[in-house]
Picture 1: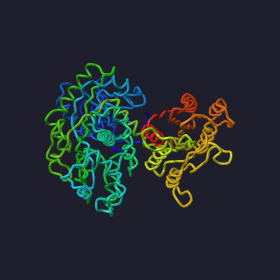
Picture 2: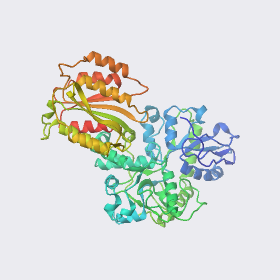
Picture 3: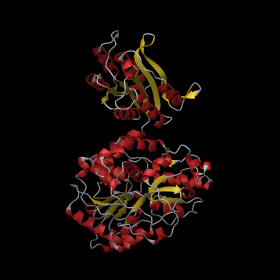
Picture 4: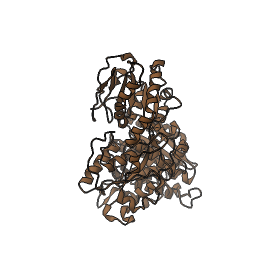
Length: 597
């Protein structure tokens, strides 16, 4: 991993016999710490998530007073949980990153699950890592908006969130057209704990299970995937971190725009308390206090339950951690679990490890210690990784040329549907267009034989952004019209069409997007007058394949006449995949997934 510039305050505190607090960082940064001069070989290296690292620095004198040794040195380095996971997964380069962690205080156990998803990471993590504090993930909303949804009497679940943010009428549907659309803020889930917890929870709710019961099979359910896609398309702001979103909201509030900046976003309960109290986000500093915002936040505690920031204390199962270090780490944990330390954490807005609260949370508007929902554990390691990977795929902008077979056999009834095969295909393609953002690239061809003179394929809509105008209408509207007017005729000229479409996609390659040709056919090459053989097509595709400018080929075959073996050979040449769809729901799901990935 590489480091960017330092973006937060650097603490350099030397206490007692060489105790040091490292750099407080938001994201990756160059490590800046005071030199450890005494007992350097016995220094306990503690990597802690930045929002709690400052508290640990304040506790170092207390630890030194309790220690029986003058050589119990502790170095606390503030580092994001995502970066620690990256470093440990990649083998931890001490020359680049500094000494490896003896103890890791992650922001949440969900990061432990991400680490455990790799074989290397799983070996480093013990079975039990006790929490030292807790703050549940909530859905934050400007209070007037929450009250328009009957907060705090009503309950809003993660499953309700997808419906709320995709409401086409926005706040007009709730009697407030002056607020405009429902603006949902979500940061990058593979860097942000609250964002990761939100998509895990939404996926679980849409799959009808608790988050800790979510399975890989559940994530793969097409309806879950489509609802996550709808959630992604509804995201209005993707600021780098949730704390940056809070800072942006604070600026908007000062300008009188607190009800039009963001409508809802996931964050932990403690940050709602800090925001409403006028405290700066992201740190444990309570000496700096601003005026409370004009429009405070309200915290929804989702009815299905909530994953929490639970700050697990991970004593690494690593070869660099010897028994003396382990003993020192256990002593440091004992101090963190002491009543005095726990009381301090409650004063700073955290809950205790078991959910107990202090007066500060009980006496601030916007949070409700009585309404906090069930606390749930993160799902299995592979599931967490799968959710993050699925979201990453869904959130990528695409540049897709759809090529649909309109040969005569597409008139045949799709099994059990009452519609013909082409109707099923165009319905799925239309839904894919509706789910894609205006920035996504899309184009549409049809093919059979002699559609345009002696040419076997015809461009219906050229490849380009959906929000761009094509004549007097947008490309999105042009695609919807073209799909509704497609009509089956003639034979299947597969080879010539596939090559021409691939060449077109190469010509329109966009390095900032995922570039694909998605081809749907219900047959095989059956054009007797065709000028291209299979071997010629393979040779041409081999020449066009370029790993520096990859264009994938997704071929979907439907019906008994499909030559799957040939489709697999062709997709393998350029990188892609061939699928067969035997049922109506198969063709809809596979085509929709291909067109939105």
